[in-house]
Each structure stands twice: as structure tokens, then as C-alpha cells.
Image (tube, rainbow, N blue to C red):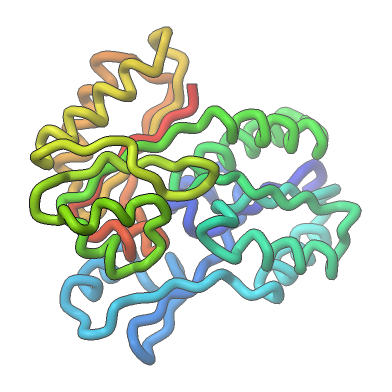
Length: 280
């Protein structure tokens, strides 16, 4: 095997892209009442959203235990990896980063670097894919870490939801608390600030919010053909496809991925949510 192995968690929403690019994914836990699942292992995004809309028990998600990370780290090192870079969703949103840190200390702290990317979903996913590309090119662990930390400062995420119901129910709303008194009259534009969910703006209709996402992305990219994009959706493939086509037409991105968000984001965003993530 040799070289630097890249690990992330299932909140990266990479799906099959992870294995295709040599990225190992550790699943988060998902619970509906007494029913427990592993994200992406025995619960698909489609199954999750069906239960989200109809199950009497609101879902909860949980970070992987340190033992799950330790097993993956040991397996990769035993298979011949020289070192590991483990990238995870914002520590402000989950204890996943902390679990990975504990496992790294237990297994081989000198060979494993754990990074809080301060991002989530394919913000984290894009960073993991770039890290894997650098690792394949022969970059050292320190060089991969430097790149991830630099890129993590440039990743931008903007999203919108047709309803604030799931955000309010989920509880982890950061700076969005001021929106909850206005549920029926506004549609928020949501972003990440310092690893936490925050309000970027608000409009009067969901269609306008979608248009605003595209406008923001176009305004942030200076040159065609350079940026890497992900368009995310929660069982809204038609809206996501339309957004993706508008991005292609305007910016000709170097990479564009359209993906369904899993339980980590979907629990709080709810069905119909869409978002754009990009790395200039």
C-alpha cells in the first residue's frame, strides 16, 4: 500500500466517490427510536428520508466511537500505509473529531494526523478528495495536512431549506435562533461561519433562495474552469440538477459533483433542502 492513507467520516456524503478515490469512510450512527443504523452501511439516504418524514421518532445522529476509528487506523497501517490523514466534520457540530483524536493517540499518534476541517457534507468531501489526490501524487503527510488546512479556509457552503421545521427540531441551529419567530414568512440562506451554522441572508420564496445560491457562487469565482463544486440536495434531484446546469453554463467548473446529503445534514435540513459548496 505505502504512502499516506486518507480517512474521513460519512458526513462527507461522498458515497461511492470515497472508495473510487481511495478514501476510507467511518460511518456515523443514526437512531430512530430504538432502531439503530450505521450511515451508508445499513441505511441509505432514500431509506433515511422516508423514515424522516413518516417515523414517529425524530432521528438523532452520533459520532463513531473511538474504537471504530482505531479499527480503521490499525487496518490501514497493517496493510502497509506509512501514515494517515484523518479529516472530519466541524468539531462545533459533532464529537466525531474528538473520537478520532482519541483513537489516533491509542493507535499511533506519531503516524496519524487528525484534522477538524470546520466544514460538513461535501465541503468535507471535497477536502478529502483533494487530500487523496495529493497522497496519490506522492505528497508527504505534512504536505497533505498543510494543503487540507489551507483549502479548508477557502471552502464555501451556502444552502437553503423550504421549511425551518427540521432546523428547529434538531436543535443545533447556532446563529439561526432569530429566524424561528419568522418561520412562515422567510426562507433562509444558510452558511457556515467558524464551523457553525449561521444565517447569510433571507428571501421571501424558496425559488428566490435557489436563485440566490447560484448568484452567490457565480460572484465568488473569478475565472472559469478552475473551481471545484458540489451541489447537494435532500430528495430534491430536479432542483439540484437545475442548479448544477446553471453552474456548468456560467463557470465551466473543473469538477462538479451532484450528491444527496445523508443523515448528518438531512436530520436538520429536512426534505427539499439544496446547497452549493465550492473550493475556488
